[in-house]
Length: 377
Image (tube, rainbow, N blue to C red; front, side, top):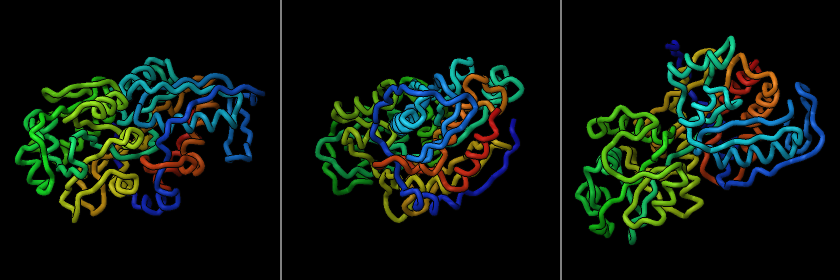
C-alpha cells in the first residue's frame, strides 16, 4: 500500500480563472491525418497552438467515457499538428480501459478512479522495472439528469438520492421529494432510476458521493460496478443519458457534457450550504479545491471531499486520470505517449477547448502532471 501525503489544491480558483473555467463538451471527430512523420524521439514545435510533437506511428488507448468529449478534441488538435502520429482512443469505460492497459494492449488508459493497490501490483508485469501511475488530466461534475414532465427546477439531497437509487423512494411525489420542492407540481409517476451496466469510474465516484454524504442511507461499499438493488441499466454515460432523455419519470447520472448535449435538465443538490448547487464547471472546481494528493512520487492520485458544504461547490465530481507506466513503457510508443500527454496537461491543452462542462486542472497539479509525464521512460 502506498504511503499517503497530502497537499491542498488551493491554487484551483486562480488556475480555473486563468484557464477560463470551462472546457469543451462537444464531441468533435478524430480526423485521420497524413503527411510527413517526425523522427521518433525528436520533438518539433508547432507554432499554431505550440504543440510539441514526438514519436510517430499508432498510439492506442482506451477507457473513460467521461473524458471522451475532451479526448475527441485533444486527439483532433494533436493529429492536425503532429501528422506523423495516429491516435485511437476507444471510450470503452474505465474498467475496460484499465483491463486492456494491464494486459499490455494499450499505451495508456483513461480512468475516472485512481488505481487500486492490486492493480498497481499487477501493472508491474506490464511496466518492466516500474509500475502504473495515476495522472489527473481533467475534472468535472457528474450531473444527475431527470425527465419529469412539468418539473424544471428539481432539488434533491444526498439522502434522497441514495433512497431513489436504492429503490426505497419509488414515486416522484414522495414526501422526501416534496419537502425539498414545496412549490413544484410533482406527479405520482413511478421513478425509473438508471445506472451504468458496465464497470465505470462515473459509478465509482457517484456512489462515493452517496456513501460520503449519506452514509446512513447508502450501505454499499461502492466501486466501479453497480451494487444497489433494482433500477434499470444502460451501457456507458451516453446510454444512460439516452434512456433518461426518452423515458418519462427517469433519473440517471452522467457527466454534464451529456446533459448539455441532449438538453436534459439536471438536479440541484442541497448540500447544507446557503443554497442548492447546480452542476457547472465553476461549481465543480470549487469542490475539487478540497481534494488532497494521496499518491507518492509521480503518482498523483487525489482524494475528493464529497461531503463539502462550501457555498457554490457542487459535490458530485470526478477527476479523470490517464494511467501510464512510470518506467517500462514500450519503446515504440514512449515518445508519442509523452508528447501527447504533455499536450493534454499544457495550458493550451487545458484551455484550448470551448463550451462548458469540464473543470481545468489547478495550476499546481498541472505542473506536477507535466513533470511526471516528462519523467516517463
